[in-house]
Length: 270
Ligand SMILES: C[S@@+](CC[C@H](N)C(=O)[O-])C[C@H]1O[C@@H](n2cnc3c(N)ncnc32)[C@H](O)[C@@H]1O
Image (cartoon, rainbow, N blue to C red; front, side, top):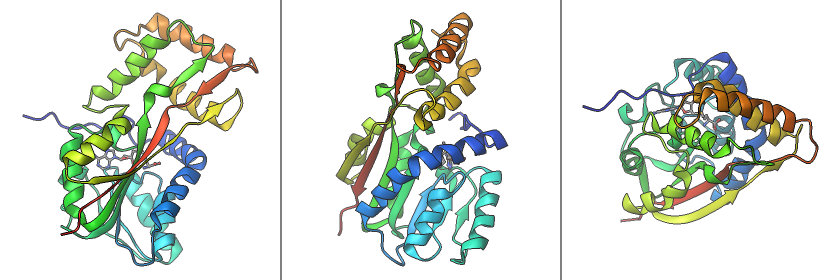
C-alpha cells in the first residue's frame, strides 16, 4: 500500500511569510517565462500549488479572467478565494486536495503551470500523466523547479557535503527529489510531451543581499530538522550554523543558489 503523502513545509504563518518573500525575489523569472509562453486572453489555465498566490494573480491578469488551481492547504486555498474577490476576474475551480486526488477535466487546458511543487512529489511520472490528460492537444505544461546541485556557500564549510546529503534525504523521505528539475525533460518525453524549452536561472548573492537572505531564511530555518538526518549530525549542524552566521559578516562570502529550471513541454496535436 502507498504511504500517505505528507507535505514537508506545511502552511504556518511563518511559512506563508517565507513564501511571499521568496516570491518577491523569483516572480520576475516566472513573468519572463509567461512572456515567452505568450499567454493570451481567455486561455484556460490550471496552476498546481499556488501557495500565497502571487503568480496565480499574475496569470489571472494575463488571461483577463479566472484560472483554476489545485492547492492542498486549506489556509492557502482560503487566501486564494479572498484574493479572487479583489481583482474582479471572478472565481475559478479550486480543488482543495492533493493533485493526484483532484478530479481534473480531460483536455481542458491551454497551460498547466507549477512552481516548486514537483520537488515534493512522490511518483512524479504519475503526477505528470495526470496533467498531460488535462491538457488540450497542443497545450503546454510549464514547470519551474530546482536542479539543487549548483548550491554552494563560499568559502565552503567542512560540513557542506553532509548537509547537502541531508537536504536530499529530507525531501526523499516523502518520495520527493530536490533535483527534479533536471529529470523533467526525460520524464516529459516518457509521458508523451515534446520538450520545447529548458531555461536555467542561477542567482548569486553576497551577505545582506536578497539572495543571501532568501537562502539563509530557508536553510537556517530547517537546519534543526536536517540535523540528525544521516549523515549530517547535530554537532555538524551546530558548527555549520556558526560558520554560516560568521560568513554573513564577511563581505567576500558568496552563495550560489540552487538553479531554477523552466521546463516547458507541449502535448502533441491529434
Ligand atoms: C513551496 S510551495 C510553492 C508555492 C508557490 N507555487 C510558489 O511558487 O510560491 C508548494 C505549494 O504546493 C502545495 N502542494 C504541495 N503538495 C501538493 C500536492 N500534492 N497537491 C497540491 N498542492 C500541493 C503546497 O500546499 C504549497 O502551496
